Image (cartoon, rainbow, N blue to C red; front, side, top):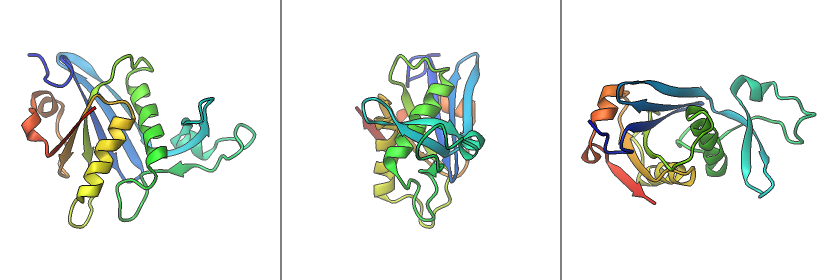
Length: 171
């Protein structure tokens, strides 16, 4: 059965405070998966965009001789919001997507974003828009937002339909 998202795979981004997971699921094939702490060291690339150069434990032990500003930053560590710094969050998600796709991201995937943060009152409309924008700016063709604290299984993700999601963003 063909998947409605990309024809043959589903990409799910799960966000927790200080933790990000990207899972690429294909019917009948092992899932590709990358997850890590959201602590990152970023530097500007030649075009002036922020690019992640170290993640997680590597970011915490990154040598100050390698980059001028080596203090790890965390765009997903805010007491009241899902995202603290959108620009660093986008750079982090781009890095995680590249890792999950083995650095061979030749197409803009459709992405399901699932925030697993327990926030009083749930996500606000601004946070929903922020999460949709995050994945879109990271290169997603379409973004769907799933709300709820229960993680969806690979089978549930593969068999889901667009109507199962609260919000959608199409670029």
